[in-house]
Image (cartoon, rainbow, N blue to C red; front, top):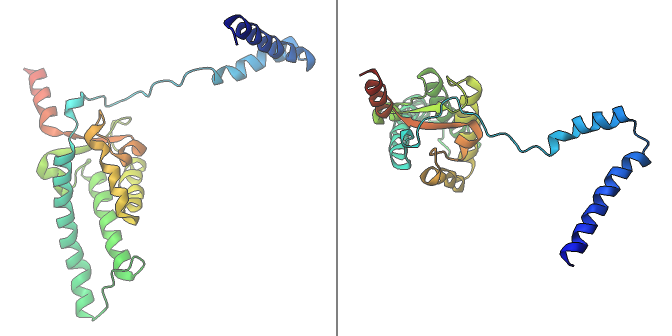
Length: 206
């Protein structure tokens, strides 16, 4: 099809659209109203506005977050041993590793409670994050809200526990500009390095 034929066909399409208003007998007011109602569909989505728009190098990378996570797992293991393993052993209750067993569900509750409560009540820091000087922040909120924490630390960590393959969702942390993994994208969060923020503030106050 030649360029001229294509242009003629396009004009014909536009003409058909415009004349369809006449065939439906829309009034001028109705046409104006439809124009207002439909304008949203031709507008490009607005770029997300970030409240905490840190420079890219402020965000903590994959390895430091991994080491912090390992420390947190050790803490959770210690808590689980004290709270569950010892009492279960004392009362000769079977510690089944099946997902829906009493022991596994209670261990999962401890795991989720650890990340959820510490992240919210300790301003974005678990024990591991405190040791390595990093903190969870929300990109669209000044402070972490319960809604954000419950999405990131409860709901999405629970989903990750369902299948080990889902831990591949952490890989984007290596490549993304704001060092976000899959859960961070859903919660609009990331993790920043505290000493870089402190250094920036000290320089700004000098």
